[in-house]
Length: 164
Image 1 (cartoon, rainbow, N blue to C red):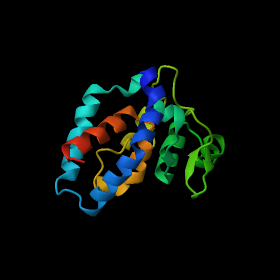
Image 2 (image 1 turned 45 degrees about the vertical axis):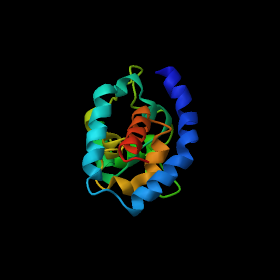
Image 3 (image 1 turned 120 degrees about the vertical axis):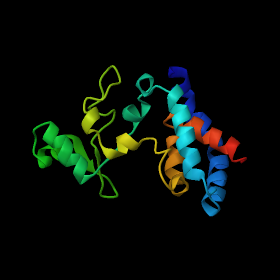
Image 4 (image 1 turned 90 degrees about the vertical axis):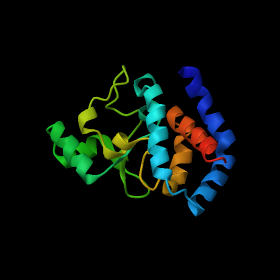
């Protein structure tokens, strides 16, 4: 897994132009059954992929925290939402709450999430490859191919099946 993660950013970079072109066409004319295909590809990939062997998303990027996330997680820690924000979060340039630092402070040495049942919505949905209206999140998906080996594999398989 270490070798795969080491090479992933370069492999994703090599495919970036091809992926942009592919997603541009996809956005203009998404297949009628795209969402169904994406759920299928997502489930196939995650039947083979064990996120606990990787956790690269938790080590290298931080999720957005919604107000609901902040309320739920601060309650879990028996903290006031303001104290949770002060301790763990910051406002980014788009005025969204994100982690002050990565790796995620809730990630254990064993790659388990210390707040798994309360984790943010963005973490629950990552890498967003089974999301409705998938064709509308192309830039996020392209970014995720350099972070998540599963997202990379899903995009490559999607291009094969949709005959890029």
